Image 1 (cartoon, chains in turn green, orange):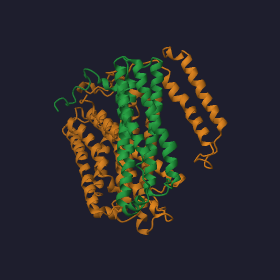
Image 2 (cartoon, rainbow over the protein chains, first blue to last red):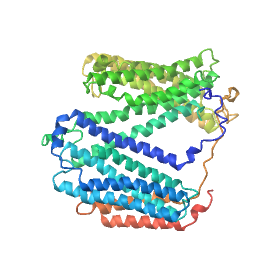
Image 3 (tube, rainbow over the protein chains, first blue to last red):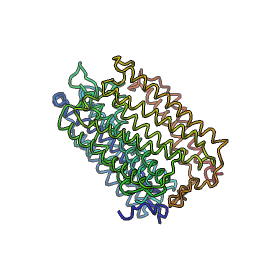
Image 4 (cartoon, rainbow over the protein chains, first blue to last red):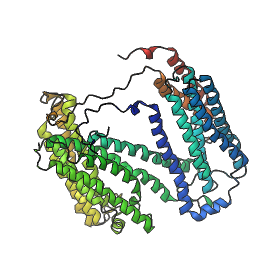
Length: 199
Length: 403
């Protein structure tokens, strides 16, 4: 703590470069979004602990949520983390064509996830009576999973925005901040899905 | 980077709190909206369907998980301001710089583990109560560290009792009273008695009025920097006297009425026992109002008629002990000419509103009957987005330097 004597706060030799860095900005965004999801997930745990009887009664009415489709969707989303990483690596090594391919693969996997969630999984669940307000479990299931679905959609918009900016020449292999930021965001969305899937 | 000014430290701690504490409030607000409009019963019992019965205390938990850090979001910048003004009028550097800086961060860290002390009457589990009581008492440690270091900074110093310093000293006094009455709340049996009484009001009025005095003192301190003229010193000192005396009277009687059992959120006192306390409180608030008027007069008089400042870089002569007021920025943000902030910030608003209108007008929309969307307005807004985006991309106005 000898450096913290307060006497030299005018002669800082070099500013921390981190503040101009888009990746740090993205880290802050991810931090606050993580708190958002954790609040919802802990609310679900609260309901499970405090309203234990209602919760377990509701749980016995729950359909089989872990369908083949859900597993396929999850594999697609987690797989897209690796394609996103490959896209970033291709971009940093200067291979823009390969970057487009990997990025489009990522977007395709994410679009498959979102489309099957909102257009196939939800209608079939609701058709069988698992409607959002039918029970505590359903309320939390739909709130958390839908919020995550919206994040996937935002991530898809973010990817298309970054692809557009790369096409326009705004982000280049020498200035790849945006591409790196979108990759981090995508990993975050995938990581949250691990948590959501586990609960 | 670690040897920042103390104000910067407190702002850092406050920013961390802001980023971490506000998302739960957002989630809680959205859950409330879903409950009110879409039939999700997160927080209320559902007699028709016990499987979907929520718990009202969950809302309290979410709210106070945000709410307690929020009070430190208020107090931390004021503590930083006080640390700075205090050093400048004591004519020396802060005693215990490291302790003051780290106690800001410690307050921020502990503040996430204390929220249940707002709801000891709602949570009956003794283990939970005791855990949060201990954590709440722990907040007193970094707060005390700050107060003791401020006092040590003042000890034996050549103090200049100008108006900003008077406001700052009252901050410390009021903060001590507010802090000590705050330590009553983690004492669970006492808290069960004091819950929702005027004692709580007295406690947080002392603290929040201290925050206000810190902010007013800092504004007086920077008035000569900002305007180039001095505020009217006698009016400011009169304002300080009225605010200190009036605030002290009002809040002390709030505390006293609270101990006797005067409940919060009542339109009228439930018992004649409390009448004299309310009369004195009202008199105190008139003193506070007079103090605010004098404060505004001091600034408004100083704006046109105040004595001109000789050296606007350092009106208070504080650079001679190494605490400069005007510090050149160490880092200039590069100015990049780009249309994207305008395109994203302005043009996407009609896009979002337009898409919402189009989606909400679809026959399966959940908003049917809630709102009256118009698809033609929606398409018009989308067209506006396209037009604005095209304008932003094709024009060159954004490549020209700013004038």
